[in-house]
Image (tube, rainbow, N blue to C red):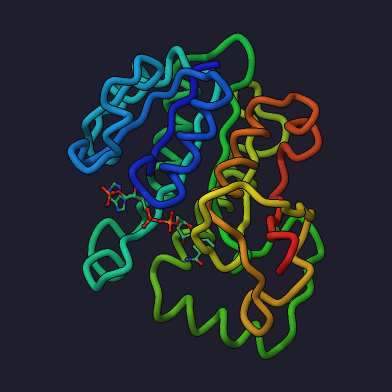
Length: 241
Ligand SMILES: NC(=O)c1ccc[n+]([C@@H]2O[C@H](COP(=O)([O-])OP(=O)(O)OC[C@H]3O[C@@H](n4cnc5c(N)ncnc54)[C@H](OP(=O)(O)O)[C@@H]3O)[C@@H](O)[C@H]2O)c1
């Protein structure tokens, strides 16, 4: 398959690209600073680096980039500094999702393109009943007021859920929700649930970035897994957490 990855330079994005390459796919990665990418990527013929800032691409450029892709995966996230959290673009993840989905639709592909969004357990799947405590509701409400990236993550998943929807002719989607991200060198056992089984605020579990990359690569590659999770927001925890 040919898979376009955005946010490929990030801590999770790099793990996803590695997993896709291990599985033998061709990867196209849109990155702002190619010089910071791993040395091993630079001469890899399975990997095409597109040097651009995603939101600066024109609609035509974007539809050209996605025209030969079977799947798109986003590991975009705001840099954890003042400018990344409070500066522009405040709706990085949502606007990129919107732009990429518009590009897919403009190409009118013969069969649906898979769109996998990295999201968060701090967001609820409003298609399901996912009850949270009053205290957690208050904290999430506060985070929404104080942290624009929280709202951005919520709006990006809402866009897929409500605008792309469940019966789109051109796009199928899944929003993968890790809990507290950690770094590990190896894929370990992990579990996938339709909804959180613990509180993202008061009892957060751990999810290693490499496991997120592994699961995102697997749902793209494996049609049975895709059919299990498409149109949903699977939650991923490391097994030991
Ligand atoms: N921290 C947690 O515990 C946790 C838990 C669950 C979910 N999440 C979510 O997981 C996502 C990714 O996490 P991560 O740790 O892998 O993130 P990360 O390492 O910070 O990677 C973020 C990626 O987004 C890109 N990016 C940032 N600002 C950009 C901009 N203005 N234009 C274009 N690209 C931009 C970065 O590109 P550059 O390399 O060019 O900066 C990088 O590729 C985030 O959305 C986060 O909210 C986090």
